Amino acid sequence: MLCHRVAADRASPSTRVPEREPIQSRCRDRSPRRPASQAVLLRGRVRSPGRAVVNVHRIGVRERRLLEDPAPAAMVLAPVAPRADGATIEGGAILEAEVIHGLAGFLALEPEWRELQRRVASGNPFSTWEWVCEWARSFWDGSVETVVVRSPAGLVAAAPFHRARPRWAQLRARYQVLMGPRGLRSLMELGTALVDPQAPPVAFQLILERALEDDRLDWIELCAQGDELDRWSQAIATSMYRSVIEEDTLVPVMPLAMDWPQLQARLRRNVKEAVRRSYNAPRRDGLVLSYRECRRHDEGLDEILDAFFRLHRSRSLRPGNPYHRDHFSTPSRRAFLDRVARRMADTGALTLSLVSWADQPVAVRINFEVDGTVYLYYSGFDPAWWSYSVMTFGVTEAIKSAITRRQRAISFSPGVDQSKARWDVSYVRIVRFSVVRPVRASRLRFAVVHTLRRAKHRAIRLVDRR
Image 1 (cartoon, rainbow, N blue to C red):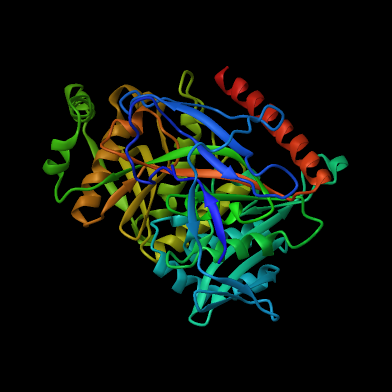
Image 2: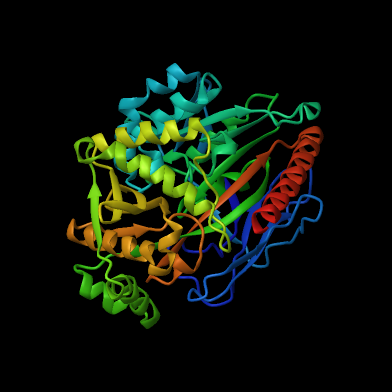
């Protein structure tokens, strides 16, 4: 049997974040080229959920700390044996992995993808075929390689990688991004691999090996959330590759109650006051706000989307903090959202929340509904209505509507701020990390690219604050 040591102090994906609890993530590296005690550490501090300020310090490549796990635990995996035909046997089940090249090969996976997505039922709208198919047609072209893992019963895992090269051509670096491209992460917020929850750990190992089987690649970039984090860590621990965490964040999720009064009783007093203010403030000034939802083409989908783009840009132009970037500033991004919204509406997975006054839109939010979870995507509002808390009014009405339609949870999308953490939420961890080939040239290229990216990110944040 193969016996591998993995970290025992993994955080539970749905655990509420206590006050001042450090977030730690260790991706073990078992490469024979360096001591097995080395690990990559990300340290952070989260203040109380009421204040909802996440202050995470990311350790760069040059200043990485390599620490030894103080209390590792042993985990015995099922017998794994390679076969001559490239298949892998684990616990009596035969798993075969292959790489499908090109866009046409990926689109041919539709029936298998839909069946696997039904079994996964993760509530992630970005893993639905409607979203992924439109994403592939819009941004991948022919630069996609899909790693698929199959068992005799059917598809077990699928991981589409977008092949990219950094803008600094002199580095000659080559890498692949899961659900890329990397520059569009603000649209694909949860770009994770689609893996059956019952899949054995070796399925993740096969994804790693197949994704990095091309010797020309220097590294791959992955994203995982919740229970997948442990299985990815286990796969990396049994490989020869080095992993580096690039981003570690939280997704606030609120389980819904049977009715609104029952949920309202769980809320803190300041949240109840904010909700009452969003209803009473307009009424005191003689303003009557109306709320409605659009789910079909014949309910004014085109007009509401146009209002969303306009109000989303208006929100980004509002002076002061917090700053909200216009994520749909280019025609290609707006065209993509328009097309994918129509596809999601055809399957009943789209809800457009509209807040109006005198038949004039003042706030719009895009919501996705998948597997009993309402995912709050991007929004926009008229800055002239800021003092009336129109976004709080819209979110409250969306929550009431979700309860009426027997949805199970509300996902507030990645990132923690005061507007999200004040609700009765728990937190799901999401990590973006890179797996680097154990070659000196690859490590050097990754170190340079990672340093340049961090410098660019800091410059953008500095400009945004101004």
